[in-house]
Amino acid sequence: MRKTRYYRAKKALSPLVTTAILITAGILGGLLLYQYFNNVMGSLSPADTVTLSVTAQKIGDSVNIYYTIRNLGTTSVVLVNIKLLDIDGNELATISLGNQTLASGSYLRDKWVGTNITGMPEYAVLVYNAGGKILETPAAKVLWQ
Image 1 (cartoon, rainbow, N blue to C red):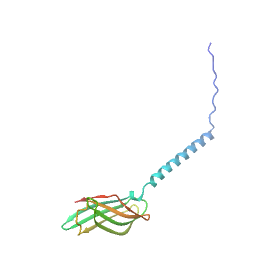
Image 2 (cartoon, helix red, strand yellow):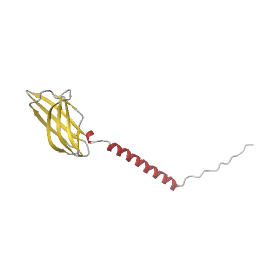
Image 3 (tube, helix red, strand yellow):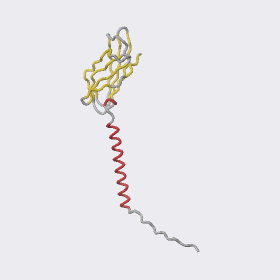
Image 4 (tube, rainbow, N blue to C red):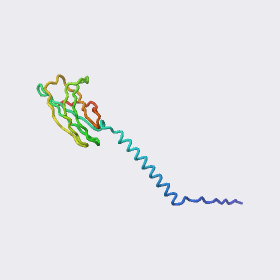
């Protein structure tokens, strides 16, 4: 003869407890996402968001420098100058930018004509002021035409 076993049914959680657990999990998940995005966006410094691209052209004894500066950051920056460097990192010339303010999300394109440059600029570095700090972009390769 077979013995019949009776199991006692477990009680389900009440709908209010289930709702409270889901709301708590949602809030904690939202806080984790908020912290993550806050840390990611906070780690982007203005130096990471200002870019410089330079093209050069030699005509006779002069060098035409065409440059584009883009501010991809969230704050305005004040442009100080562009340093033109040779292959060894020695400064050949400085292009003064007259402390122009470059608003967030905007760019500046311009041309500079240098007549007394002794070498061929290979790199360019932008010097700018962001939040009271003088910063420099990484050296950008000068593209020759």
